[in-house]
Every structure is written in C-alpha cells, then in structure tokens.
Length: 253
Figure 1 (cartoon, helix red, strand yellow):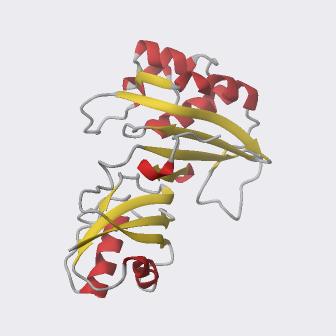
Figure 2 (cartoon, rainbow, N blue to C red):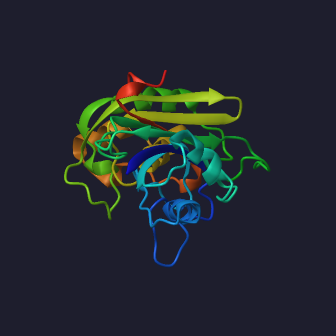
C-alpha cells in the first residue's frame, strides 16, 4: 500500500461541509467517489480537519491509502478529470505510512473575508460576506492582536464540538484592508468548532461600534459567549493552509 497526501481547493457552496453526511453531498464523499472510479478500491479519505457547510478551502490537506499503480504525483491530474469543477486537487505526493493528515498537522491558517461597500458583489459573492455600512478598520486592527498566545477559548466555541479541551494557541492574528475587502487572518495550532467565525462576527460588531474594542479580551477573561458578536456566516471562511513539519514557521505576515 502507498499513502498519498493531497492538497485540495474547493468552493464549499452547496456542500454540507467536509465530512460525509447521510443525506447531503460533502467534499469527502466527492473525493472518495472519484477515487473509486479511478482505482476500483473502496478508499477512505482522511482530512486534516472539518470545514463547515458553505465554507471554502485553498489548502485543505488529506491522505488516503491505495494499492493503485498510478504514480503519486499523477493522482492530482487523474482525480481532476473526474471531480466536480468546484473541487480541485492542486497537488498529490507520496508520504510515509506514519504520516496522518490530521495528527501530523502543526497548525492551520484561516481567512475570513468581508466585502465592505454599500452594494453587493456580482463576482466573488459566494466567498465573502457583504457588509453594507462602513466598518472601523482601525478598531478591528487594534482588537485582534489580543487573541495571540495560548488561551482558554471556551467563549469562542459553538455548541456541538467534540473537543477535549478549549485551550488553543494562536500564533498570528491580524486584520488587513485591500480596497473594499477586509481580511481577518488567524493562524493557530488548532481551532474549536466555529471559532474563527465567532471571532469574525465579534470583529464585525467592533467595526460597527456595537461592541467595544476590548470585547475579545472580555470573552477570553470571562469565558462567556454572551460577550461576543454573532457567528459570522460560513461563506466568508476559507481554510488557506495546513502546516506540516516541512512548512516552517506558523505565521502569516
């Protein structure tokens, strides 16, 4: 058997998230059905982590085991000829059998994108959140660095998660503006269920001046979800990169 690592890009619109679902289409299901066609094997694809229904990825990672003679680097080409256009394998390579897409990961980089103008987009409308009223970018920039470091992020976890601990380490957290787009970039060792979307929702409320600039700090100290903003919609969230030992530092400058 050979273990193959794949990096995947996908538009999560219309999918029930990464993980297989009984009555809905998922990214994992599409990949496994594709591999069945290619190899005639029942192959389980293991992802680096789950993404929510409607969320996207530019650098999701996953692995699978196969007895196929298809060269490892050719799997990307072969799979892309069978996958829906909303899913693409951007790289495939052989890894050791001790590699695990989830447990070997050292961290992840997520980006939440906001389009901040009075009128909505025609293009890119499915991959960012439209906010009509002007946001105070300075207030958002000043609020977000408080997240860096190791903290108990219990206030940033939605119900339904299966985490054993709510302590996480954030290596980098920043807000940047690029024209009408506002990007919230968070890099950390791991994330709780809906954690980045709760951070984004809270920062948007800070930008609207509905919450004070210290709202994130109050959430960390009080461990109360009630101190924060609403959970931002999944459409603005993209998993940008999964970090492994060969990727160097877990920061996004």
